Length: 437
Image (cartoon, rainbow, N blue to C red; front, side):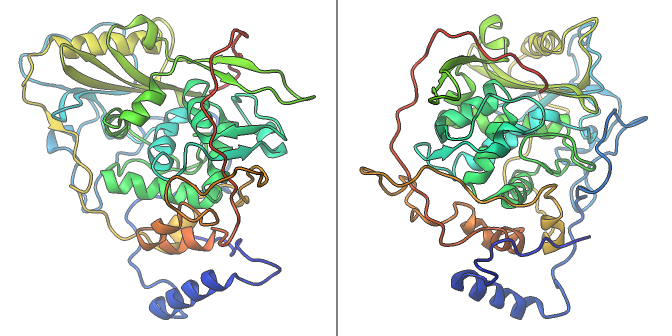
């Protein structure tokens, strides 16, 4: 277990506010190290080799901190479980883990290996969205960097010198699975380390104890995981928020032109259910060699909302999105009000163990980077979120789980210029092709 170095120094010295807060933390914890109980949750190992294939055999099985099964004991299974009287599960479902649940009542209608801890790939971006959406001003304009341009995996096409509002970056995160967009959003929130720590805090808050975030993009890192249960839990939270639901339902968006670097172009969603499946509310795709194909989505029919998640699926003989459609159809055939084999818990229903400083800090697989935003210009204003323009949006989270890691990795006193920017209109340029997701 390692602690991150204090990255938020200025000229080798900690800013006054941060130094004072850290001094208070040292007084509480004592000089011998954290007195907080070690979290029972696993952590990532950023120095281990990057996973290149699925784990041999069944993956680890997650539990609540007290060892119980989140959502009910019937979900403590590596096999198939469905509600009594349900029709047979449709053919062609090869996902090693999946779950279908009622998004309104939380009743789990059916699942296979619901708490298996699989590599999530880009479905982890749903947790990034859930974590950062309430923290970042949608009008905040973030400048692209060379680091964004060089990010591994799928990119939406951010370039150094480009100016991108957070509202557009959220859409690029979901629609095109942009790892560069994830990197830019993390930078706007104070850096990769505090963003990952906040993601893990969010996971604990909603009861997603199988989920361990190591990157904001879902790029594989040893120990990173989620489960069919947790992905459904996260999606349930997303579709309940009208602002986030609007992001999930966006089909096309326009990336701005950057003089001398990039023409403006249109991006399109990879979630084909939005066009092909009646009542689709939104979804998120994912793929890496280690995760294989992952997907989570929600749909509504006759006023009834369902969520579906699939992990470690293949595209042959049945595409993973087609598998999701078949499972949704199956779920809608069950009678409304049918009791579940378990339930998606509500936020705060399950109690997490305290997260020690080292556990939260170790969740970062990359050094913390400083937020880059557009330079102040005439007409700039304070953030509409109500925070001072120079305050990291993750700083208030420092008083919750992962406090020391978030505060220590956040630059205090940094000026963040914000411009009110309308969401760009649609264009007619062909969408950027996906390379890896």
